[in-house]
Image (tube, rainbow, N blue to C red; front, top):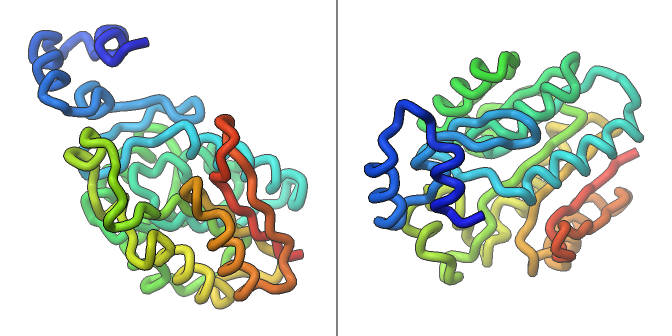
Length: 240
């Protein structure tokens, strides 16, 4: 389906198609024009304050769901979503695990406002906190999940992404590894003994992040998993 076909199919009836086509031709992402996307069966509002959810992030949720069900059965859990953006991960996990307590954090107040609206729209109760990674976090969790910024600061990306989506959600220092290193270095303080850390990663970062994880969690079971296109896109760190 072309972007124009997608626009015509999903544009809301109250919106003007001619104006929408002009916006599309001016290089604006079709998802921002429509104003929402479907993510893991949920409708998530999106705007230029939040990253547009990708299919790979749906895969992260799917894989995390499987691991959680294997390791924890039906126990209620405490889950922390770092860099929640639109709230798509937190909302999806709350729908899957309704008795679990989910906290979603972001450094961007504008992103948090969007995420809060999405939680209301999807009728889920999530604890939203403005936090620079762990700066405002006081509790311990069973699961930490994150799709953090991971693009290198000098890495070329598509113009439609570079010119429209929030750079704070895209780029990371230290060759794109800053957030993984910072989360893993400090995660022990915020995790219960039995725990899972789940990351979406850049397709060329698997080895580097594996080594970082092994340094801070030498006893953990660490696995790199591929997405549907067969790229390394996820890391799971399991502490038994």
